[in-house]
Image (cartoon, rainbow, N blue to C red):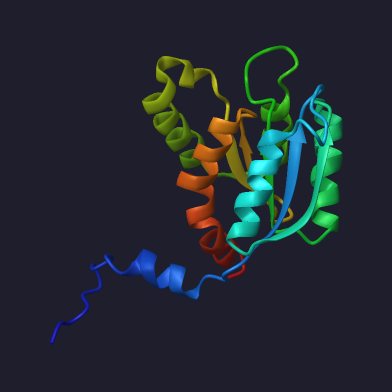
Length: 177
């Protein structure tokens, strides 16, 4: 017979995940000046991966890479009852890349681990160019969980498979407490 010690945290993540809701309501935003519904491969990958895992897609949009338009779309995501917004594109460093600024402005509680881990995993795939990514995540003041990732299909797959989807239910559950 084993006794749990107050300092024994080994079972904590598992206990949290066991309580987590199985599905999240997610809004998908593609930030691009050039992509259309036909060419939005990143958005398509996100929706497909969400659907495969039983998550609910509350809505989606393709918006120009402009902070005011991105902010409007985050508001629309909230209005649909989404708990999470997954945002792809516009996380680079060109003058048109303004997703980082728009999402950062909306974040009240940052999750720096997402960007750190994304860049670490990305470094393993693409080398030092990974440092040019401004992938960012956090929670808005009204409780919307935000993840902004690059627009490339490989980056979307990496962020969703390795970081976002394994924790999505857990994040929603934590915020619901």
